[in-house]
Image (cartoon, rainbow, N blue to C red; front, side):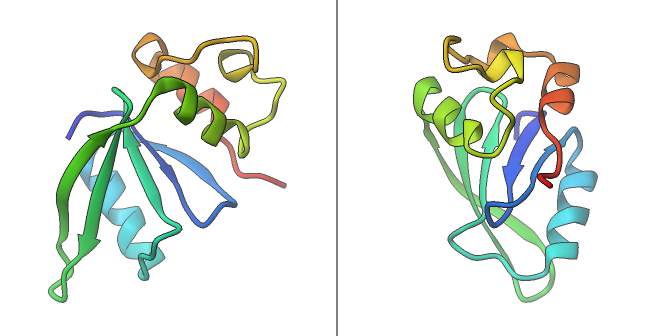
Length: 109
Protein backbone atom coordinates (compact mmCIF):
# COMPACT_ATOMS: atom_id res chain seq x y z
CA UNK A 1 0.00 0.00 0.00
CA UNK A 2 1.05 3.56 -0.62
CA UNK A 3 0.57 6.07 2.19
CA UNK A 4 -1.05 8.38 3.05
CA UNK A 5 -4.41 6.68 2.62
CA UNK A 6 -7.62 8.68 2.40
CA UNK A 7 -10.62 6.81 3.78
CA UNK A 8 -14.28 7.75 3.61
CA UNK A 9 -16.49 5.94 6.09
CA UNK A 10 -20.27 5.82 5.50
CA UNK A 11 -20.44 9.32 4.07
CA UNK A 12 -19.99 11.23 7.31
CA UNK A 13 -16.26 11.29 8.04
CA UNK A 14 -13.03 11.73 6.09
CA UNK A 15 -9.74 10.56 7.55
CA UNK A 16 -6.07 10.32 6.61
CA UNK A 17 -3.94 7.38 7.75
CA UNK A 18 -0.15 7.39 7.49
CA UNK A 19 0.60 3.85 8.68
CA UNK A 20 -0.80 0.36 8.30
CA UNK A 21 -1.21 0.13 12.09
CA UNK A 22 -3.25 3.32 12.25
CA UNK A 23 -5.45 2.24 9.33
CA UNK A 24 -6.10 -1.30 10.53
CA UNK A 25 -6.79 0.00 14.04
CA UNK A 26 -9.48 2.27 12.66
CA UNK A 27 -11.00 -0.44 10.48
CA UNK A 28 -11.12 -2.80 13.46
CA UNK A 29 -12.81 -0.07 15.48
CA UNK A 30 -15.46 0.40 12.77
CA UNK A 31 -15.97 -3.39 12.95
CA UNK A 32 -18.42 -3.73 10.05
CA UNK A 33 -17.27 -3.03 6.49
CA UNK A 34 -19.82 -2.54 3.72
CA UNK A 35 -20.09 -1.12 0.21
CA UNK A 36 -20.29 2.44 1.56
CA UNK A 37 -16.75 2.26 2.93
CA UNK A 38 -14.26 3.33 0.26
CA UNK A 39 -10.51 3.81 0.42
CA UNK A 40 -7.98 5.51 -1.86
CA UNK A 41 -4.23 5.76 -1.67
CA UNK A 42 -2.26 8.92 -2.36
CA UNK A 43 -1.81 8.08 -6.05
CA UNK A 44 -5.56 7.96 -6.71
CA UNK A 45 -5.96 4.18 -6.69
CA UNK A 46 -9.08 2.83 -5.07
CA UNK A 47 -8.32 -0.11 -2.80
CA UNK A 48 -10.66 -3.09 -2.56
CA UNK A 49 -10.42 -4.76 0.83
CA UNK A 50 -12.29 -6.88 3.33
CA UNK A 51 -11.96 -8.07 6.90
CA UNK A 52 -11.34 -11.78 7.45
CA UNK A 53 -12.96 -13.81 10.21
CA UNK A 54 -9.66 -13.89 12.12
CA UNK A 55 -9.48 -10.08 12.18
CA UNK A 56 -6.97 -9.51 9.38
CA UNK A 57 -7.48 -6.89 6.67
CA UNK A 58 -6.85 -8.12 3.12
CA UNK A 59 -6.38 -5.80 0.16
CA UNK A 60 -7.84 -7.66 -2.78
CA UNK A 61 -7.12 -5.37 -5.72
CA UNK A 62 -6.67 -1.80 -6.86
CA UNK A 63 -8.02 0.23 -9.72
CA UNK A 64 -7.24 3.72 -10.91
CA UNK A 65 -9.63 6.57 -10.20
CA UNK A 66 -9.49 9.69 -12.36
CA UNK A 67 -8.32 12.70 -10.30
CA UNK A 68 -11.42 14.67 -11.35
CA UNK A 69 -13.76 11.91 -10.15
CA UNK A 70 -11.84 11.58 -6.90
CA UNK A 71 -11.92 15.35 -6.35
CA UNK A 72 -15.67 15.41 -6.94
CA UNK A 73 -16.18 12.56 -4.48
CA UNK A 74 -14.05 14.19 -1.78
CA UNK A 75 -15.64 17.59 -2.38
CA UNK A 76 -18.93 16.16 -1.16
CA UNK A 77 -17.38 15.59 2.26
CA UNK A 78 -14.94 18.47 2.59
CA UNK A 79 -15.69 22.17 2.83
CA UNK A 80 -15.75 23.96 -0.52
CA UNK A 81 -13.57 26.62 1.09
CA UNK A 82 -10.67 24.15 1.35
CA UNK A 83 -8.17 25.48 -1.18
CA UNK A 84 -6.63 22.21 -2.47
CA UNK A 85 -10.09 20.79 -3.17
CA UNK A 86 -11.80 23.85 -4.62
CA UNK A 87 -13.94 23.36 -7.72
CA UNK A 88 -11.55 25.49 -9.78
CA UNK A 89 -8.58 23.25 -8.98
CA UNK A 90 -7.68 20.00 -10.71
CA UNK A 91 -6.81 17.78 -7.78
CA UNK A 92 -3.90 15.42 -8.14
CA UNK A 93 -3.27 13.74 -4.81
CA UNK A 94 0.39 13.32 -5.73
CA UNK A 95 0.68 17.11 -5.53
CA UNK A 96 -0.69 17.31 -1.99
CA UNK A 97 1.47 16.80 1.06
CA UNK A 98 0.33 14.76 4.05
CA UNK A 99 -0.09 18.04 5.96
CA UNK A 100 -2.39 19.38 3.20
CA UNK A 101 -4.51 16.24 3.36
CA UNK A 102 -4.72 16.24 7.15
CA UNK A 103 -5.79 19.89 7.15
CA UNK A 104 -8.38 19.24 4.44
CA UNK A 105 -9.87 16.15 6.07
CA UNK A 106 -11.99 16.69 9.13
CA UNK A 107 -15.15 15.28 10.71
CA UNK A 108 -18.28 16.90 9.33
CA UNK A 109 -20.54 18.74 11.76
